[in-house]
Amino acid sequence: MEDDLISKKELLDLTGISYGQLYRWKRKQLIPEEWFIRKSTFTGQETFFPRMLIQARIRNILNMKDDLSLDELASRLADAEGYSEIRLTREAIIERNIVTDIAMSAYGTEVQSKGDLYSFGQLLHLYAADTLLAKGDMSLDEGKLLLRTLEKHAGVLTGKPCELYFIRKMGVALFLLAPSPAELYFDEGVRLVAKVALGDLIEQLKGRLS
Amino acid sequence: MTNTARGNLKIMGTSSSAGGSFQNVGITGECRFTGNVDCEEFGLTGNSEIDGSLKAEEIKLTGECGVRGRIDAMSVKGRGELTADAGIRAERFAFEGHVSVREDCEAGEFRLTGVVEIGGLLSGDQLDIGLIGKSRAGDVGGGKIRIKRSKGFLLMKMVKPSQEACFEGRTIEGDFVELEHVAAETVRGGSVIIGPGCEIKTVEYRESLEIHHNAKVQRQVKL
Image (cartoon, rainbow over all chains, first blue to last red; front, side, top):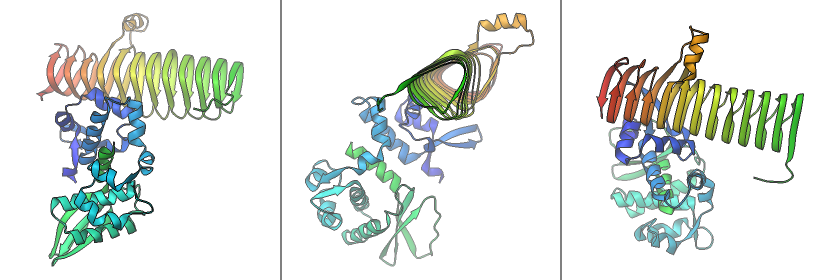
């Protein structure tokens, strides 16, 4: 759990933003309240953030803040609804480099709904598969299994923080979706290949879409 | 915002209202609202209690105003006593008197002369507090933070010698921090000036640090 958090100090050093900016963005609700995690350390109280989420969010804000006012930005970032409206064609997805060509041609037809359009949810599933493929952890066939898992169960977990576990035992691939924080313990023969927080993926995907 | 026939509300004397959506609300006297108030301009001279939340473009107060919910506004101005149980969010906040908030108080520009009591976070791009009495906040954060004794305090001290003016907070973080008569556990900032009467456990700074000889700082760390 410790690795997944970043202290405020470290965040400011890494991103080069100032306290003023951070508090302003908080006030404008560009950074959700729940991400401010208070903890006591040996030097006193400190604020921590979920590492992946906050870094992706700050990158998004920095990229967009020149073109949009903070209020517009807030509605765009907070508004998951805005994204759920998104429908993209296969060509647009590949052209904008949201999901690679390979993943698209392998799984594109699997998740496709009516017409030639992909929704945000479907994009997210493709993006998840694409990420794991790119890491070289997963074979193309296993990706299909992943997509089926996501399609079947992700709906129930919408809006809740959840993590995707990819494990392997004796060469057999298994996917698990669990609401986080969850602690899972496996027997010895199991190798945890990858663990991905869906929240991080969503945040990264939003960055690519905007 | 829908502009479908928002009426004005004008109250003189003592009255109560269920609240609702208005164009302008003007109160001279006393009024109790039993629900949320949403308006363009909220003007009060006298005394008001709002059992819900107050949302307005502009709030002007003279007197006492108690809000059980939260206050959301572009600008809050006035003098007197203001309490909000569930927090304040405003772009410009300028007040003389007593402000107490149980949760967070977030503003773009926060100027206050008097006493402030905030349970959660006090944040603003610019925070300027002139102390007259005993103030406190959970945390303070922002761009430019200045907490000092107000000039008015000297006058006050003549009338009432037992009067104190100080500020107490857990952590204070800002890019420019200037403090006087502040007690805090941690102060973090870019350039930090610790003035007379301060008692700080740890100061962490990036660019510069000045400490007045009448201030107590236990530990200083350059980042």
